[in-house]
Picture (cartoon, rainbow, N blue to C red):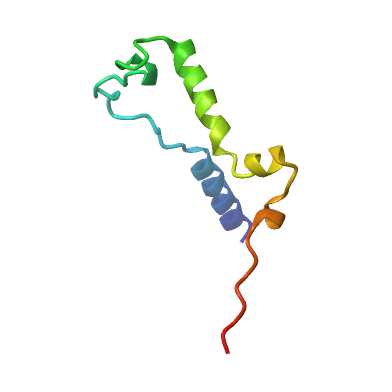
Length: 85
């Protein structure tokens, strides 16, 4: 009985130490990605590209018009229409 348990334990230990290699068969051979700022609009100027992204991000805050006016979104929302009877 003890011999069977020791053989089973040894088999489990040896099986746990085996690792399957996860390397790719060959490296990616596709085309190289171009930079987002390499097009005609920015002509490779990364600083101009980042400034354009920052400028565009200013308009993506849904609450900024309310905050600049000193309001919150709930106060600026229209009231619900009365129900018809």
